[in-house]
Amino acid sequence: MSFRKFIFLLLAFAYLASYSQRKREIDSLEFAFKNCKDDKTKVLLYEALSKLHGKNDQVKGLKLAEEGLVFAKKINYEVGEAHMMEAFASNYFNSKPVLSKEYFDKARVIYNRHNEKAREGYVTGAVGSCLMKEGNYKAASEAYLTSLNLLEKYGDKKEMGQMLNNMMALNIYIGNYNEALNYGYRSLKLKKEIGDIPGLASIYGNIGTCFYNMGQHDSSLANNLRAIEIRKSLNDIDGLALSCNNIAGDYAQRNDYRKAAKYLGLAKNAYEHNGDLAGLTLCLTNMAELQALQGEFGAALTNCNRGLKIAKEIESLDDTKNALKVLSGIQEKMGKHKDALISFKEYTTIKDSLGDIERGNNIMEIQAKFESEKKEEQIKVLEKNKKIQELELTNKEENIRQHRIILFFISGGFAIVIILSFFIFKSYREKKKANIIISLQKQEVEKAKELVEEKQKEIIDSILYAKRIQQSLMPTEKYIERNLKK
Image (tube, rainbow, N blue to C red; front, side, top):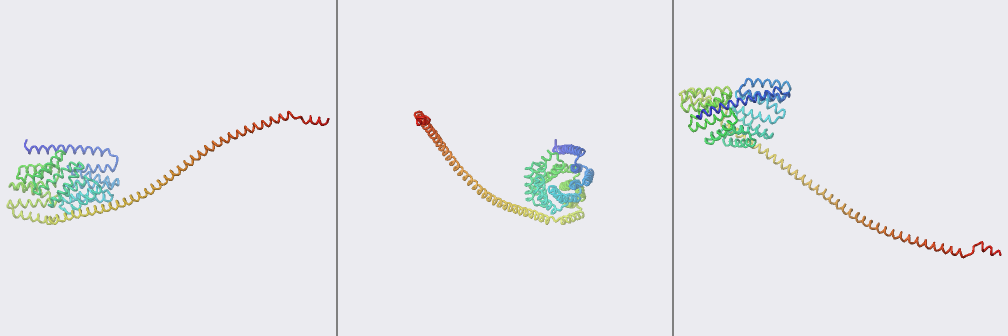
């Protein structure tokens, strides 16, 4: 099997797998929608269905977004209205970035009013992506950095990783490649930390693009191949199209135009299948440039004009500028000098309006300012933490002092209790001893008393006995009286 057939079958399989997976997701959401009893949850299901249908059928996606918005207003759920604004923005993102940005802005205002910081951070970043498509990189940079700041405070690592990835893409566009890689590796670390596999593919792709622009094509191809392997495993058609587009550039730089053309053809088919106009205009411009290198000027002119038309339709100034530059070169090689001059002047006008060099400097200034403010904020936080630690240390020392005082009084009280207990015990023992002595003495006294009483009784008994003897020997009074009368 040829390499081209292998890639074609791979994309065909991805189409089928992606379609099957998307259908299962839609069926699952529609079942949940029919059985949903909670109105607020129903609004979120409207949003999810609108975004999912909108990937292949924008008309249906927009219809669901409109129905969801009417329903959210009916139940007086303003945050739900913001979610439906996101649905509108998502449906318009690839075809009408200006209109998409307006809807994201409306959602952001509502989220801010309701203190929904996580969603506010997300839609602010989405506004930045719309501004990127418009070619307004300065405003995009400010939006991305504001979003990153909000997401860092909320701790949403997944979206933080995405914003860092977006900042990488922005820095690639302005030619600030070292800063781009810095953002890319920070994003890569976060994505690995949370296990965000689809996010890893996107970052590897951007790292590959960065190395491509730096002229390091081996590193570029290696990273793009990592990205395509992940996207194959996920059946990610959009991602595969982007990877094919990037890999085509790597092969073009190696003068392997055959493989480059194959990859661009596969990317073009995928972009057309998904209705990704932004990706399609980029791919067509790249195809035109490659064809011009091979002397296929007729095909190059057709593809470049088609890409230019789409870029203008979706109001992407940067894609329009790039297409005009390639078109001017093709027309020049074809001997159409007048047309080439017109295209080049239009290219120069847009380039000047975007202010490439000044724009790049401004963005770097914004990034430097953001990093500086971030460091200042970190310093303030550290100082605040230091003061808190000092206060905690003071409180801790005061608590220790109070604990020592309490411990001292407790120890003193305990010692007093022990001393008192000793004296009480000693007194008790002495009293007990005295009571024992008294008891013994009392017993002795009792015995002496008994002895005295016994002796007294004996004496009394002796006296009584002697008295009775005496009385028995002495004559009675009657006897005496009788004898005296005689």
